[in-house]
Length: 381
Image (cartoon, rainbow, N blue to C red; front, side):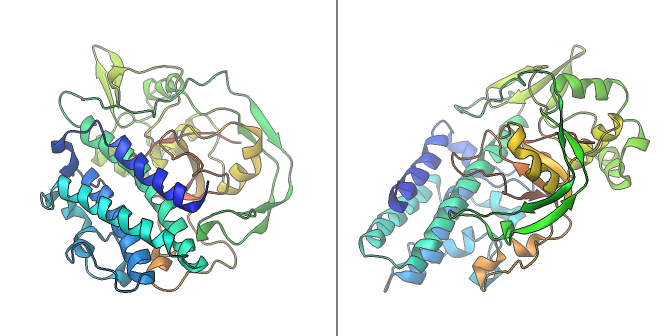
């Protein structure tokens, strides 16, 4: 598939996954960390307009001068922007206008492809495609939070169902030694996956499976959320202040655990992997099991020996630059480097990750309190 076809397919996919939404769903922002679906559709379009069309097309005519202010995210080099907590205040532009914006930019991008663009320009297009795929996954996080906090727990058409964990977990043994970490192929990767380097690892064992709901229920029922000895001090404060006693979207009804999925409100399925777990909860569960979370390097070393991709998996590694990491100049250099503080690394992918967007060197990252992403637990020792 060439880059133009990949662009077209990626853009069409976003429209397809939004197809079952109602107009009222598009502008809601129930929490600061949630962005409205309408904003995702417009922001990913602005990315191509800002960094491709405006940069590489002579005399390009911007669709609407206000949109750069409305739909920039965190790129300080690209100018002023609406603050993230205020994205849900925008009832205008309308959903229809956002779809018109996408159509306009897509039309301009087709003309761009016809005019023999430079390799430098195509490199930015490639980044834009992967950026949009990231926002498609964020859309699933956000729409689930939007609908999962409504009284009737509405469902939408989706293909992000978790599969049952196929068997009881076994421990995979990894020998001590020197291992190479980081991206080494010729395709696309983010700058935070570079540069490739060696790490020394002591021998360790890692679970062949993700932790299941049934296993996590045992932790809950044993008093795991009430035992401060299992928690980081910051994690203990977090669950106390927010009255957290179970994973996000879990509710006890008639003494039985239920949870919200994008298919509706259903009893918790024991053999599915536990999801929507914060780093704090993952750590406490590992302490309760007298095990630990793997480092991101251990995860990458062992990833050839187990199946992954259902949920992003918390590691016990802070999000930091690799040796010889170089931040690109200008706005695109803001993509990853400036977030390398106070965040933890997750590895793998999830059922909401776009096809061909995952690889075992991918470094996702979130603050340790975040639970709305599709995250789970794999233990090590």
